[in-house]
Image 1 (cartoon, rainbow, N blue to C red):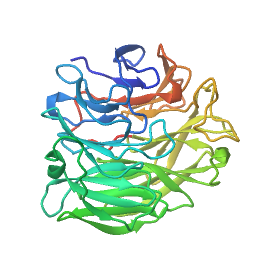
Image 2 (cartoon, helix red, strand yellow; image 1 turned 180 degrees about the vertical axis):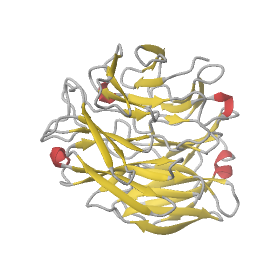
Image 3 (cartoon, rainbow, N blue to C red; image 1 turned 135 degrees about the vertical axis):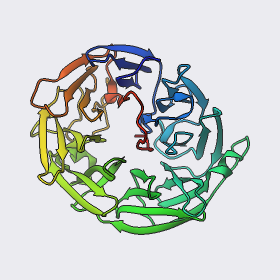
Image 4 (tube, helix red, strand yellow; image 1 turned 180 degrees about the horizontal axis):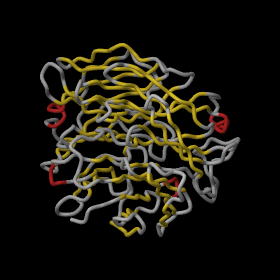
Length: 408
């Protein structure tokens, strides 16, 4: 097995690449069209088949277990993939389905996968844009699939054992449903130590646990600034939930005037802190050693990478990014492209010591040492354009013992 330094997925071109050890060159890994919303999920040390990561292939209709001992392994799942999450040991994964190329919810399929047996079951729940987390039932210790529904908002808990024995033909399987939750949920995280599920909604960072098969709400943590998160990440080492908060105009055509803050919650002390960064489009920040990294597509300061380490002094550093042809246009939603090309954006990922950022439409990836954003980055070019920014995942060797269990 060849260790992967940085995985670069071009979902629009249906191909994956990896860098060499010095992150100076790329070489193809194989085909793959990772569902852009479900993203790439790192798997922990000890995961079955020594798989290193997983993703939903939205072209082939299966879950890919990448860099396993015998090469890529696949399991059939329902598509289009909306969200992907796993148990902390990597044994079980769950996949929800979303809109795909459609404008209205239409699929109600949920897939659960036994990674060890390469076995999957599909059931019907509720159509929408569902998030998913695999949590631990406080009373029984068993795994529970929690599904976050939108408009109307709800959180549903279904015992994993009930899903695995549901049988063929996509039967309907429903669980305990909690409806006292914001309608506009977007962003999920999970703390495996306390068994707490976090959901970002318009009401704040809502928190839940499952006990005896029932969902119990914990006090909601208010957003500390006039904005809200749309993407969450969990740092199991620092024990923080992190994300970017967006405020400003509700109209997406005014995205250039959106205000942005980087945010984190200490999940034990329930203390929040945030710092404002450039206005414009911030999309799916990444965790770095001791903090966060985010890219901003903006008009005033240009496109920049920002690293924030809230060490008491709230240190923050920035660096300019390569321009993108076909970048979001003022007056149009930032995800709307033109007749000739999709809207471009950026992916960002870090292994703690290095940060990688794509420039959608150019095929280029910029890589910095986390401590030296002032230095010129290493640049590598993929043979394909990385339209829509592609997707990135650093895969350390050996695999980490604990990982964030929710893909993005």
